Structure formats: structure tokens, C-alpha cells
Image (cartoon, rainbow, N blue to C red; front, side):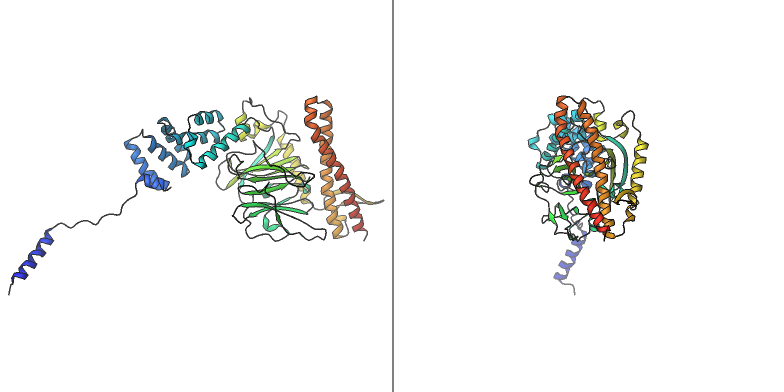
Amino acid sequence: MITLASVVVCGALLMSAAKPQKKKAEPKTDTARELYMAGKYADALPLLKKQLEKDKKSGSVNEMVAVSLYKTGNEPEAKKYFRQAASRGVNEAYYYLALYSYKDYDFAGVDRNLGELDEGKLSEKAQKEIARIHRAKEMFDHVEKIVVVDTLTLAKKDFFKSYKLSAGAGRLCSASELPFAVSDSVVAGSAFVTGNGKYALWAEADENGEMKLCENSRLLSGEWDVPVRLDEMINGDGDVCYPYMMPDGMTLYYSSNGGNSIGGYDIFVSRKDEETGNFMMPQNVGLPYNSPADDYLLVRDEQTGLGWWASERQGVKDSVTVYVFIPNTLRENYSPDEPNLDILAKVSDITHTWPADFDQDSVLERLTKLNAAKEDQGGSIMFELKPGVTYERVDDAKTENGKRMLKEYVAEKAKQDNDEEKLKALRASYAVAGETERRAMSSVLLQLENQVEKRRVTLAELANRVRQAESK
């Protein structure tokens, strides 16, 4: 039986079937600006480029496209968009264009772009970068004149193993190779042990996760003391790593990305106060050693007459370029009017650093011979043990203790020979120098004379210890 209720229900069903069904709402898609503001530059970029097709002269969209490209590693392509944004008066675009000029060592371009910039409207991070650029600009008038002998592009991991140092200059190694236990917080980087094996430096993380330099010394008993962290004069703000102590035990080179750098990591130098033993105010070693990129581990080997440092300025991923150079006894800078100053500061072509009579092959050959001599642990020496008995090789020592002390003596003797040659050359230069030059040279001359005299005493003590060990 068909009832009124059944007719109503059937009618309702037919009407609902006839109505079009509503589509489910699609999930909301973030706009290009939202993605950009969230730092999702790779996702924002295609959407921003579509917007730019509709309004190619938009300053804000050009700037967002440029920043997105810059942040995703497409710096060359980003530059044209920054220029377009700058032409539309976008303040931040001038900041990035100043960075481009800085990386090219184009300080006229830096001045031009900073002149258009309202620095007060930039983020705190951007203002710090501007301060770095200002520091670099000041250094550009004081580029040190050095001879760069050779370059090596190597994997960043353990690049320091390519440094070929004499025995007296000490040993570079990883922290795990130190002759005592170190903290588990030690990360990648190099440690340093002096030529006599009695002092070590390395970097490990502090309570805030920042890398700081630590030191340890070997006791008279032969055991190692308790490691300690260097003072705040060295371990200031930022990460501090890649240490190297000169054989004088007073001059420390290291790398830091703290507030006084001009890029990421810069190389700094500090000396100990002779009276207090505390480190004095560190100095940025400047150009050409430092750059807008990361720079590490400067070593000066007095025995070979060569130095080494490493840099990421070439921009090769996971790689560094190691520079081999001839250090100066006294710093000499290029004239600020030098026509190739940008090339010399960047070290983009090492041949520009060579004097007219420079013979690269002879320097590299000398280094090869010195390295071969170092690897020969029983290398040729002349040590008079007693009248009628002369050791001509380290292996001539009869006792292990005597052999160890003889190695120390040989390392110290090499440094003394090198210092005496430097002193001889410096005295010759002093004799013909003018009054102004003599004033500048006098402190270095006096320091070197004192160093030579102190080492003579050290050598005499080491020689006696060798003789005592060998007489047992």
C-alpha cells in the first residue's frame, strides 16, 4: 500500500539526487609571500617568478626573487634581480649589491651601494655584515707583500696533513692523535704539538657548544698535566680553532669567526706578555690571508723559510685551497695605489706575487728535500758526544732516552741556525737603513738577539742531557 509518507520520502530522494553535489574544499595553498617569509625560498621561488611575469618592474617582487635565488645558492642569477630592485628604490637590495662588490674586492662599488643604503632599516645580522665590510675596506690599504709559491685544492677534511713542516716547527694532527685523552666534544679540526713534544693545543666545545682552544703541557716526569682552556683574551666570542704556536713559545696563530673577522673564520695572531705570561690583544692578520670566506690555520716554518694557510675563497664545495708562501721577517705592505691590488689581495693569480727573478721550481725542490730529510728519522747530523766520538745520525744513540733527547737537540739546533741566519741578514739591513727604518727594526733586532742567546743556553743544556743519557 502506498502511503502519503512513502510518497514524500521518495520525492525527497529524487530531489536530492537531482541537486549537484558540492565539491570538497581543497586545502589552502600558502601564497608566495607566506612561503618567502617562512624562509621556504625554494618553494617560494617559482611562485614569485610567476608574479614577476605580470609585473616585471615590481621592486618588492624582484627583491624576493633575488633573495630566494641568493639563499638557494644561485648568487650569479640573483644579481640582476637585486639590480632591478635597487633601481626601484628597495633598500635591502643595496645591501646585497654591496656584498657582491665586497666579494669581488670592488671597494668603489661597496662605497657606491652603501651610499644609497639606509643601514638603520637593516636587520642586526645585516648591520654586523656591513661592519665586517668596513673592516675589510680598511685592510685593503694594508695588503701584505708576500710571495705565494704554490696552491693546492684539497678536501676540507684533514687538509692540514698536506702541510710539510720541519721537525722544529712542530706537528699538526687530529685531536684523536694527541698523546693524552681529550673531551668527546672535540670536532673536526687540527691539533698542534710542539717540536719537542712537550706542549699541545687543540679546540673543543664549551658549555655553550662553541669551540674554544685548550692547552696541555708535559711534566718533568714525562706524564701530561691536566688540560686547561686558554684565557678569554683568545677564547672570546665565536668559535676558536686551528691553533699553531711558533717555536718561540710566545706567538700564537689561530682562526676565529668572532666579531672582529671580515668574513666567516679569519686568522688572528697574539703574543704572550713576557712578564705575565698572559696573551695580549689578538690582531687580525689582514689581507691577503683573510677574505670574505673562511680562512684557517696559518703556519710559519722558520727552518724551511715557508708558510702555509688554507682558505675557502675559491668556493669549491667541501674543499679548501692551501697556499704555500714565503713569510717576511718584517711586514711590508703594497702601496694602496698598486694597480693589481685586488688580484694580490684575493691571490687570484699567484704569479702576480712573484718578483722578476723568482724561481718557483728551486723553492719547491728545496721543500721536497727538507721533507725527505724529516721523514728520515735517522737523518744526517754532527753531534760530538765526547772527544773522539761523534754521532752522525740520531740512530747512533745507544739508549732510547738518549735518542729522544738527541732529536730534541737537533730540532732546537735547526731553529737556532735559522735564527742566526735571520739575525745576520737583519744586522746587515740595519747597518744601511735610515733613522726611521732603524727605529722600526730595533725592537725586532733586540728580540731576535735575546731569542738566539736564550736558545744557546737551551742547546747547551740539551747537549749535556744527551751525554748523561748516553753515559749510562
